[in-house]
Length: 105
Length: 134
Image (cartoon, rainbow over all chains, first blue to last red; front, top):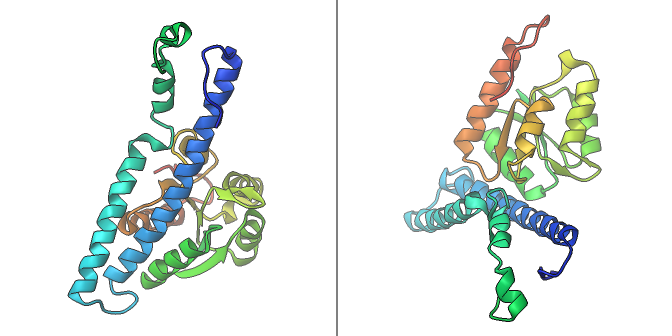
């Protein structure tokens, strides 16, 4: 991944931002598909569509589904780049500190 | 009722088929845009569950081909995708999708949307077109 630099042209910065947004969207897409599988098959097991579960088995699958829901909430909160988080992060770069060598950006 | 599931992810196709068959639906499959279009024409499903990211085109291509064909024979399309909402949702609904669902989705919500889309399709007048946006 290319690092953003304040000395890059505005066009280069914009292109890099778009590249990062596309990468985030792709990763979020892949995670959503994987989560959908966990969700689907977990519920198939819980609902007994693949046979009866013991109480212990049902508890374990329930824990898996709860954690899948947690990951989904993280995704829904904006990891796929729809919430403008990347834009916000880019805007928070302290250009002056970078130019003066006063600290990390 | 015959449903066509279009998704390039084999595990997702299998999971959906188990759930849909348990709810009384007959399930057909396609794993890319071209075979999806062929299956819609040849098999005449009552509804299509369509992923957007597909080999050989994408879900929008499939909807565009449907749009250009005999509209009265077009089954309702429920888009079910891992793609982000921004842009894709509005574009899919404008392309004629009855609903846009983002993965992962509660099974109950998916089944309700399928039932609603099938009912709306059944109620559609042959001389007019009702709104199909959920």
